[in-house]
Image (cartoon, rainbow, N blue to C red; front, side, top):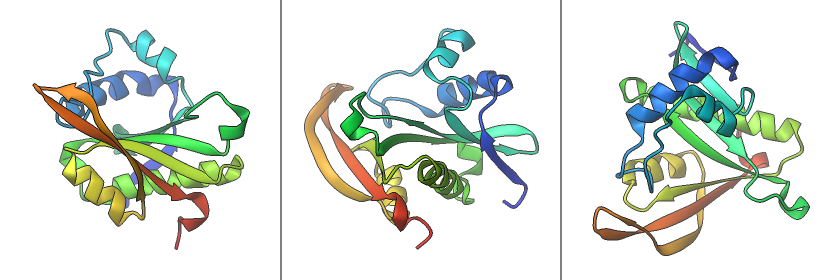
Length: 165
């Protein structure tokens, strides 16, 4: 998709981002429901400028959010990302473009490592992240109890200087 615009989120994106979250997150790929009861609640958790969005013909079709994993100064070189792409436009390079854009942002802000978390049951996402060069750095065994069974949480990472290689 060459017509995809990648940019920082703006206030007008909030309703579309809420709708996208409601569409994509479920108990197969998230430890709990991420349903926002209002755009204001979403905006409090994800203020404009804290996500990079992909827009196709003006419609938000994906995002990568970034945050610090902890408030500790000794951990400020790391950003933790969360990625969401509309199922109707998956496998067209949007997720990869979003991760690359997050890496550019991270590099510009002095970050050296990107990390993420993914449920062990989300095989498609794990394969995608591995294809993008992410490596498993740990596994939290039985971290969540979802639909009557325990599910591991996989921790993955990629060094910022490895993007573009």
